[in-house]
Length: 267
Length: 252
Image 1 (tube, one colour):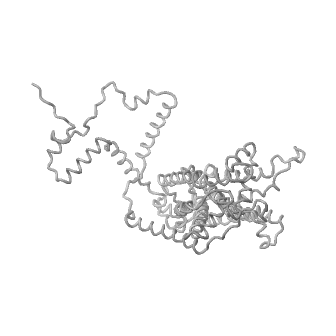
Image 2 (image 1 turned 180 degrees about the horizontal axis):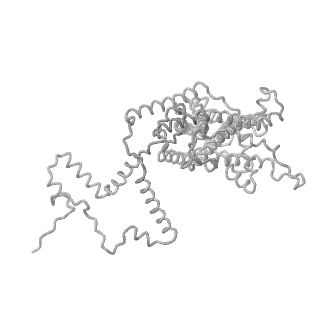
Image 3 (image 1 turned 30 degrees about the vertical axis):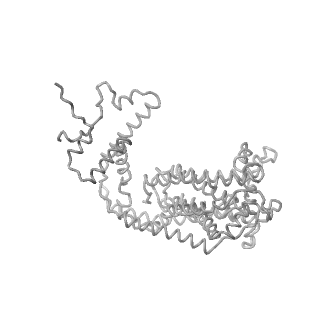
């Protein structure tokens, strides 16, 4: 005589044993169906873990403990500079993407002996609806971002926010400010105007003057020892493909570290 | 629990006695992996002990609600700044640039304003020492010297956290580092002015030599002034701080 063992995993039997409303039944059926295929249950623990991690609170700061907060309230506006540069970065990204629809990086000459890149800029500023404003907005948000980043660095320095345990974020910040300037420089070259061209010339000469690897660097970044099609295309790819990904990832890490370590209050 | 309910660990096969635990398995490893495991164990223990002996009391944070208050505030701030940028972009439009002409070098070659400092560093070759060892030859080409100056500046900024330890935070608490910082900021400005000296020649009635000397003199002066002022401030400030501190926690 054999008694058939109950099947632990007979979810239908379990559902029948419960008194379910139609909505609950549909919901449970769907959930079980998904879970049998995607193992949702495995991710619950991860979610729970994330939930607790995002809601961790830092210990009481020295400021709270000794009630010193009357001393530095005037620093607070300066603490917004990091967010401000991030906002400016987003604005620059959106306006830049829109500009990208109307721009082609080429030094080939069109009729009128103008390069394609330059005549595209003229088209954007002259014929495109809101084009003048769009380019203006892109340029100004880039300027604002750079200025905000510099001031952000000064704030961090003078409030001692770079100190242990935040050295790595300080160095990451230096990398970011450098990349911001590279962003600006590559963008500066894109219109292929007189200013662009000669700023590019200075860049090539600087690259060539690096000992040992100068020529290689000039080849890599400027596509040669003199300015031309290759230079413009490299600047374009750096500006719209390489740098956006790299800088966005680094900004995310930068902000993530601040999130983890908390804001450094002067104390 | 009735037999209709599922078991909490439904479906998981329990380990037999032979299966090694996590720690046993880790302890059998060798080399770097073993070291890593040992360190993490120590670190965990250290954390636990510190947590046990700390007098920090868990408490609820009396907080501003994230939704909707904080979110609305953030949205307001963000839209204000975005609006600010829109306004500037509309109110101060940029000019239409000249097309590139490789055949005519313009009188003024400049990058954007935020690279003036770097551009100015390229004009430092007068400081490039002529080594008598090499018979008056320079060790580095002038331009190389300027490019290296950029790296020196960035490197100097990068090592600050490793030189300045301790938990003093405010400028008044560290007059030396604050004055270094002020000197650095002033230097960034003066070197930028040096970079655009062709443009400012009309504004400042200075010869090239005077401008060059001021570029390095002003930061030092600014640093000294900062140091003096902060030292003076610190006296009164530390007095206040200590008075409050001792009132909170009388010395035993």
